[in-house]
Length: 302
Image (cartoon, rainbow, N blue to C red; front, side, top):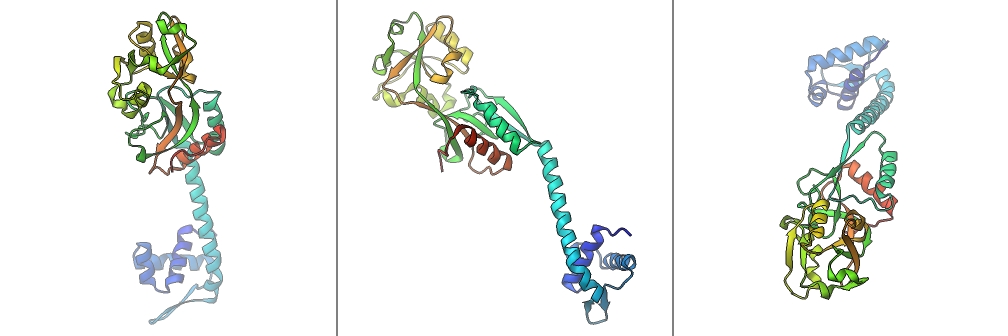
């Protein structure tokens, strides 16, 4: 004898409503179809489950005995179906991680990945390189789910973030530049130098890398705009300007005629993992948690 989940669900609805028409409306089926399913279940069990007359419907003794088991079986079935759905969803789930430059400081990405995949073995990660014009690395237009970004972000109220690294800013310049002979350079000595700038679309991040807050109102001389590591190196090597860079990114551009020097008078830079404030997707939460565990980072924005 095989009883179907549908029959148990119909039985439980009638048992709770004690009214076939109301139960049928609740189940979005016709009353004759519901009655037919109840009769089928009664035949399978070999007993009457409801006592009916023109005025009321009552559970029979057998029906009253069946009801708690039916409810438990239905609850277990719902839980089983949800568990399967989660597995299927995880297998199909892809979390897109945006970045403008790799945050590969001390194995950060592998450490986060290992923790994330332990929590979500069925999910996959897709790393996405985003041009420097977009300071949010894909968060603003929804093409990234989480992103490694440099602070400050434009429209910061739209995002939440963890600061994963805080590093001094160095100045990169051509090896033949007169200031390259120094071990340390005061930012005041760079105020009249042409600077390489991010595209205007980078918003407040452009000002950060130009250190406008340390210029005392002095205007910036822009030697060229750059939108990638390669463009930055080529502009530096050609002597088009100098540029502030994060300590961790210095190795990406310091070769074949380009050097970096420590700078006094500018604040450190902060690399963060960011996500949209209104995004509560479980994969996003799990990646943020994995990042916090791997880096010891604490939330940098409420």
